[in-house]
Each structure stands twice: as C-alpha cells, then as structure tokens.
Length: 274
Ligand code: DGL
Image (cartoon, rainbow, N blue to C red):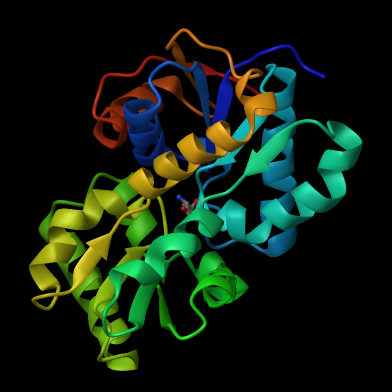
C-alpha cells in the first residue's frame, strides 16, 4: 500500500481544470497533481479501445507519482475506460488504490434539479455513444427522460480559445436547437463534458427562459468530500499541505497559456512522458 500521496486529477486536456478548481475550493487542505494528456487529446472522438488504453497509461502514471486516489475529471474517460480499469486493472495494479469518475456523482443528483422530469445532456460524441449518462441516471431516477446531443465542435472551440467569440455562436445555437427538438419539455441542461463550462456565457444567451444550466465541478467536489468522509482509510492516504502540481504530455507554454483560463489562476506546468 502506498504511503500518503497527492490526489490525482486527470483530463485529456484542460477541461478537468474546471473540476480541479471546484475541488480545491471545497477541499483546499489536500495536495493535488493534475495531468492533461494534451499530446493525445481530444479523446471525445476516439474509439473505446483507444480511450481505455490512453486512460490506463495515465492512471499508471499517477500511481507512479504516489497517488492512491485518482479522479478522472473527463467524461469521455469516465464513460469509456473507468469501469474496465476499476474491474480488471485495479485489482492487479494496486488493489488498495481507487479511481473515480465524474458520471456517477452527476447521475446521483441531476434528477433533483428537474421539475418536468426531462433533462438534456450535452457531451462529446464518445460520451453520448457510450450511453453512460442515460444508463447511470436510470439507476437513480428511473422516471427521468434523458435526451443527449453530441457537440463535437465544442471541445475544439474551447481548446482554441474561441469560446467567447462569434464563431462559437453557430455551433452553440445549432446543438441547443437540436436537443430541444428532441425533448421540448427539457428544463435542465447538463454540461457533460468538462470543457463546456467555458462556453457557459454563450450557452446562456441561447437557452430558453427557465431552463437550468448545470456544470459538474461543484457536484464532483461535493461528492469527493462525501467520499473522503465515508472512507477514512483512503482519506488518511491523501497527503495534506495544499500544494498543486500541473503536468502535461505536450508543450508547457501552451498548457500554461490555456490553463489560466480554465483554472482561473496562473499555472506553471511541467512536461511529462507517459
Ligand atoms: N473534457 C473531456 C470530457 O469531459 C473531453 C475532451 C476531449 O474530447 O478530449 O469529456
């Protein structure tokens, strides 16, 4: 069993920083390391097998850094790789370590926001294809109607810093139009991709009045706090001291320039190879 180490937070790129930001706000006392697999992002358009192998490489990397607990702050990795890693790899690699995702904690609570019992999930093609959201949500809110819409252009718009520009309007309008055509009673829109909170202001411009827009950061942070309370054996293996380290598999200059926008603060990253 590892001695205590930082909590690992993972994303294919920058999106997980929107989740880390909320986790740090809620649980500032712990140490964190963040890894963005920027060299191989986006994950959202890749096959199950590719996302699984990429994510597994990253999980192994976190374990080598001494992390006992890793959060996949990426919906695509949570949808396409988490279950296999938890069931097949973890028992062999490090049976006492834990890897958690972002879909389950979101599914556990999302139904409480809806009065019409119809929600819309906006996500990457990979997350939509996996049907993870409808399946997970049905376990907690069987009466809830879940409509999905893949927004394959949104991650590139965000990654390229176009989220506040006019170019983004076309795709935001188009995907919102599509999802409300599928389910006109939708009164909650879930941003099921950790990149999408950057588009929140733009989305609000085109959202029908009265529809709630839900991002996952705070939900995941609350759920992690609850998990650590319920699992003191894991809590004691998470080191404290408030430090944060940022790693990227690609250019550190690019990472630092983008990361500040996602994380809300200047970031100095270190390059790593997997
Ligand atoms: N941020 C990831 C997610 O939440 C997707 C980004 C990507 O396509 O790599 O799904």
